[in-house]
Length: 217
Image (cartoon, rainbow, N blue to C red; front, side, top):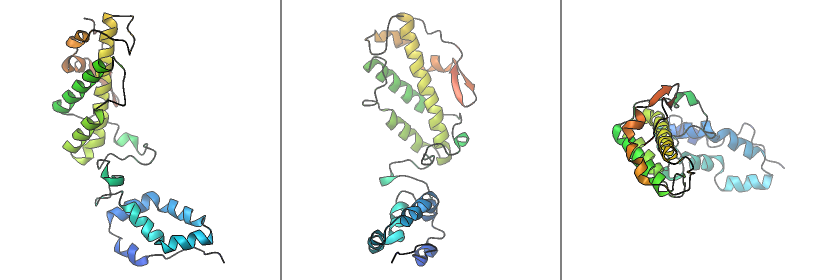
């Protein structure tokens, strides 16, 4: 005989005790529909084993570990900085966080220094194996209030891309035949400073673009 879970009143005491629990509410909003869909596909034998292992209550308790006490998604082991999760597909309400805001000189300088170091080290190629950019972003995120973290990270990414583009333009201006991956004289970048790059940036919508591409040396 199949086990019907339609309208199941599993763990009502647990749900009641979690009614004001932000962790539970966040997990419920995110995964409960999927959990119920998976349950509906279970065979009677799978359902029996599922219930022996704690059923939906145990599953939801496990899912709650991905959220902090404020209901922020922080992922397994808390690896994600609160305020930096944008939904499972990464596209939830982009307009609320893809915004340009003020970012400290310190954070921008650290990003510039890192871009320059990596540009020289990798001969202009972005190497995901050696980059330290994630550490810089995380340090910045933890230094600002939660509601500014995603917007500030978006802004810092805009600066980062323009720093790299300015260095590329400078090397190409000095050696038009140069291609990323080829060695170049790193002294070419002496004239490329954070201030010189930023002075040529203008905001267009939610992005920074260069008003000038003259980085000749």
